Length: 229
Image (tube, rainbow, N blue to C red; front, side, top):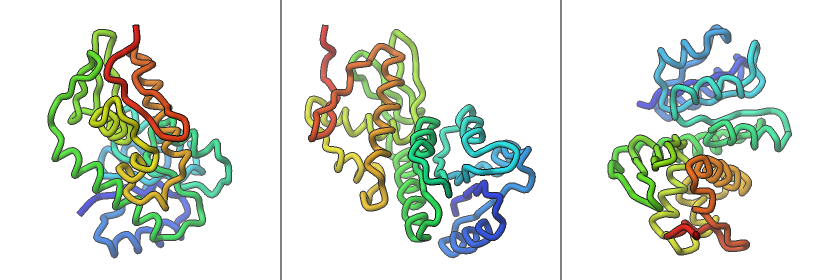
């Protein structure tokens, strides 16, 4: 049974989500004191976190930042606001997905199932190190290291990088990446993939690999086999 932490101050919505998720054998925990969200997170040790953006005391973006300082646990944002910048901000902070209220409950379940299956099956199956462009990729620790430093990646970023490296020098289409990451593209905004790739590129730039991933307009992305001089 997976433990989920639902950071939601609307008690009616919380109870509805808790009831529905418990039917799928998920163990759902909530937050009683919104000044102590991190204490609840640490005590619960959830497999996945669902965060509303509008919360008392501090917003969901604040708590996402705090969680990301300590953990790469998958995070899904919920929002009743219709601002594209909210989704972009969520992804830039390291969230794995974004759902706008009101939402169909089947969509939430599908996203939770896809993320849990991807993250936890992937972690148990992948323990090897990979060398690429002079960098060592530790798939188990979600870390890329070279002589210029080390970067920590989210689960989505690691999976994007892994998919590209497995087919280095070949174009990997956006549709292929979406299906690999989220398994059902009907539930994914195309912008979600763009944000994840851009965030991965920014991190790679920090260790001198700013040209490692090339965009093929209208086709997809390519992981280079060697860097240009």
